[in-house]
Image (cartoon, rainbow, N blue to C red; front, top):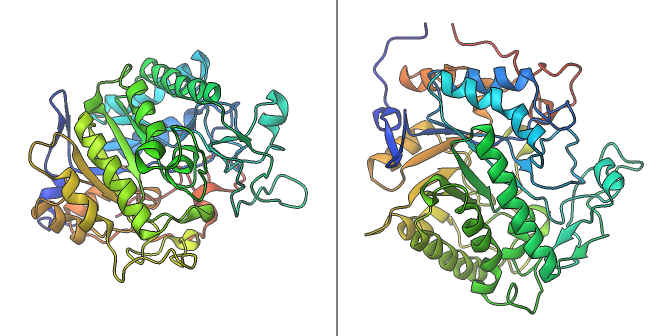
Length: 404
């Protein structure tokens, strides 16, 4: 056992009604993290069953599983999961069943990388599937260690036609339908990180002149249509959207006026639809704590500076936490336990996401540490614990000790 003190975070530990049909054991969410361990033809193995079950056992109120590709991909992460066939769904079924057996809740995260791919990656070479994005504008960065010369993201991009857009939206719906077969309780859509949906939202990556480009409503259209397609599979109250207005990964940063206009429109539309939750990230701001050697630069391009001390929660939180809203507000990125507890106490947020701390503090350990006022374990193994490389699938995955 670890300590016997009364928690300083009683609000975080109380049960929370996410929807009328789903009550979480606490307000603490384990965020989606690509762990690169799906070594069975992009399907999870028994190691993943242990990994998720350990963290659900008396632990997180909600687990969002690692981002899962909805179509063939040229990802940097060769062992990220796919959800395109019944075999993929059946591979996830033991995981969701095990999570449920210990009282946990687990959501699916459908993922399309957009322009953040390389067309020379094995899966794209095998399938001849194109790298799709709203416009043929290459992304900066990327590091494809398995390709000669370690190139970055591809410049061989196919600008999406209306037919492509219809097909990809259908892929989101199909992947989520398979996730439902697999036993996932709901869906969190990733709309940040420089991936496809994020590509549509920002004018640096979207220069279209049709109904999916130009104005803020047009640039938000693709995401809103994806939401509607998934809502034909899961109730709207069990769908969340993860956004990072200030995210500047892969040169996708937009000016403050643009991000303010875009995300104000987007959030209002999501709330109007009755989306289950908005997961608001402050990634890209000079806020939060460092994340090992994967910390994101807060240096933004000229003309893209943020107001001094800018905090997305201050601007966008009231759009969710407003009169008549059925939408819950989750936040993520570098929040401390004390900070999150105070925000819940003030009624400014409903849920908190912790990401990498759930790697180093396994099983019920992280939540138990919050309950007993014990500091989190810090990573002392280096940045490779997040995604690899590794000698054996359980290394830095299922070999973290619990507190004594």
